[in-house]
Length: 60
Image (tube, rainbow, N blue to C red; front, side):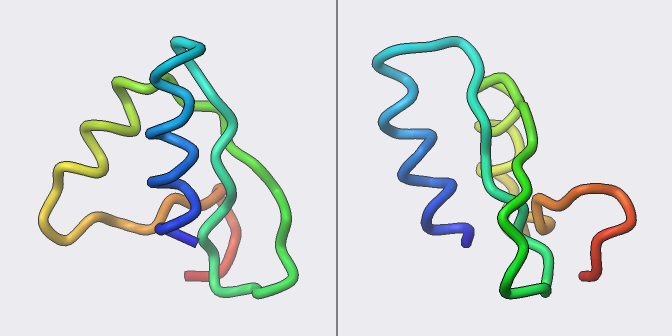
């Protein structure tokens, strides 16, 4: 899912300040989304060991 979110980030930079990203929890059937600004996602993406982007309470 991280690759999907990276692509969403790249495309969204052309159109918007914020975007919906997909939850990266370990539940493979999860289709929930999280609203982040592009700046917030860029900060997460820049981390060498980027944490999973997941909703509170979702499995790791």
